[in-house]
Amino acid sequence: MNKIYPNAAAALDGVLHDGMLIAAGGFGLCGIPELLLAAIRDAGTKDLTFASNNAGVDDFGIGILLQTRQVKKMISSYVGENAEFMRQYLSGELELEFNPQGTLAERMRAGGCGIPGFYTKTGVGTVISEGKEVKSWGGQDYILEEGIFADLSIVKAWKADDTGNLIFRKTARNFNPPAAMCGKICVAEVEEIVPRGSLDPDNIHLPGIYVHRIVQGDHEKRIEQRTVRQKETA
Image (tube, helix red, strand yellow):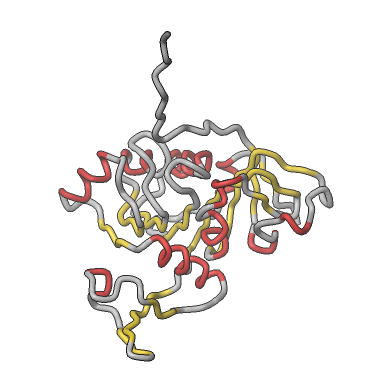
């Protein structure tokens, strides 16, 4: 089974459809599947729901799909740094389902493991728990959260072999593994595709069984917040 595709558009061919749920890896601007997001924009697929830690910034990450009004709903933890996101949400143009970061990661992981729901203390007694089932164990309340079963997962990795085994670089690992697990189809963009057998099995972060398509490309690697120290003078 050949999993390698020549470009992002080819890797998404026959996969995209209006109204789908997409799980996307990345945290801030680190580990963002930027090539696949650009291909989704160019395809014009609309009424999308994204499960992602955040929505990028105005002109990068999922932010480019907000600019083109292709996103209907966000399932997210952090929505700062994006003025267009704020404008659409406050004007009622965009639906938002807030999730604590750990809960969102576990919802993705649970979906990838075939677990339809789990109980957690996180969010008990807050707006997060509104409308959700509550159970008590040992005198403590827990709320029921549902696993995420996405139509498509898009992730960004450092290295892959041709079978789809992935290695993520440092903090780019973030939400990428659980996001990859929960999609019916997972498409991974990578910086480098290496020969089969060259990856140390003990260092593989995501087994290739989760990955259906791979595309290699060049990446921008933006810095979200650049802080520098003023040069000291004598």
